[in-house]
Length: 306
Picture 1 (cartoon, rainbow, N blue to C red):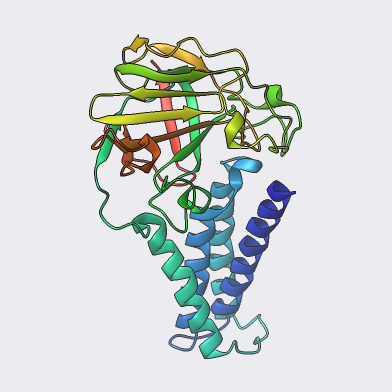
Picture 2: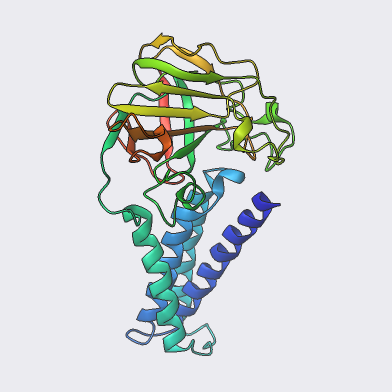
């Protein structure tokens, strides 16, 4: 199960970073500076990339607290000579790992796509609650799944958080109704006219997604200078039809789990409109901004009570 595997990796790297930090506190500078930097880079990496949402997004703050406590306690014990010396980590192994984790931390913010072709300045398609970008970012490595799909390098998958900071009532549920975003109203993020609206496909039972992308309930909007595509709507929940004119903030459907989807979420991507002779998904992808701000992998979005 991919959810449990990712969660296991998160906690493994979390514990490993604490162990490396403890080792660093047993060494005197400059002898221990490299290991100290390695532990910090691992901590930043797991803070950014950790799949905390499968348990609670608040867990990353608990981990940060554990990191600080480990650092303080380790330094105090080392100062009083109460700690046995660890065998030294290979300098080159430490340096290699530092470069890997450090590079991934930098790429989290910069991505690999360079300067985007343009921006899709949209309104947030939700009205109330807290949401999280389950997949998103500027290409590799934060948007790996979308990177290879129809050039959707800036596409986003969004889930909703409950009061415990989880996107579901459990770590993983096979009931779509257990996911906070399921049946949540989706509002049009732009003004335009509807090119396509489908809702005839039944919702998947997580994590089965054999129905594939060809059976996705979706809404495609022509917003004058761009195309905005949203997918995985709930079965029989789309409120608009092809040809309709929609305004910003107009309800267009309910979030679901149809098509190529492991669990309920809203998929959204935008493309420039430059050549009417080619399909919309082959146009240049646009970096999405909600209410003037772009979001990266695992960042939280506060819809407030609008």
